[in-house]
Structure formats: structure tokens, C-alpha cells
Length: 117
Ligand SMILES: [Zn+2]
Image (cartoon, rainbow, N blue to C red; front, side, top):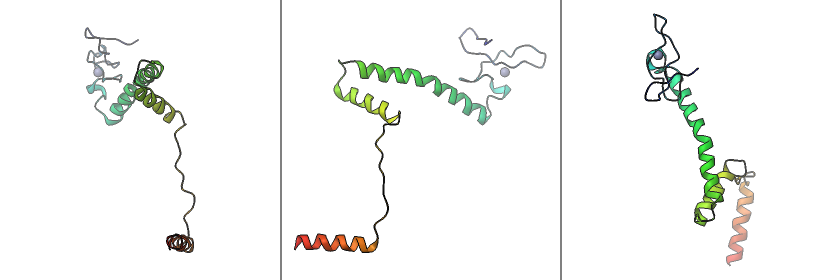
């Protein structure tokens, strides 16, 4: 079970050499303090990832609030709608289909020059 100090910071889950629970605050988003591995790059990265994942739901709720509020400016509601669509697989796709050959490009230039003449 998670323990917290009087400042409501989560405490490290490790124990001291004497077997007592570590009293140092854990890395934000993490489970251990700096002395128990919290300064290691992979531990820091995982903690940051946990913090970011915790922000997903509030971010979505904020977008939902803006999108649903008819008192919001249309530009804000459209931006919220675009963000939601972009992140749910409805982003417009730009697709390049093949590369024209030199002969094809030469034909296009010839056609364009003929149209101008
Ligand atoms: Zn610790």
C-alpha cells in the first residue's frame, strides 16, 4: 500500500539496510527515491511516462468541455474537434502515388507551352 508524507508526496517503496521503510519521497510518477534507483535514466523515463499517462484523461475532458460548450468561440470548438479527430485516426492523409517519368514531365511541359501559345 502506498505511503505518503505530511506534504502528500508518495514515499519510496524500498527499505533501508536496517529493514525500515525508506522515508524519502519517491520520484514524481515513480515508486522509488533517488537513493533507491530514482536517478537512473530508465526509472526517470518510466516515471515521466506515468505522469504523462495521468494527463491523458484530464486533457480529453478539457477537449470535451470545449467541444460541448456552445458559449465557446467557434474557432476553439473547431480546434478541439480537429484535435480529437486527428488523434483518433481521422487525420487527413497526404499520399504521393508514384513518381512521373522524365518523358511524362516533358509531355506536361510541352502541353503547358502549347496552351500558352
Ligand atoms: Zn528510498
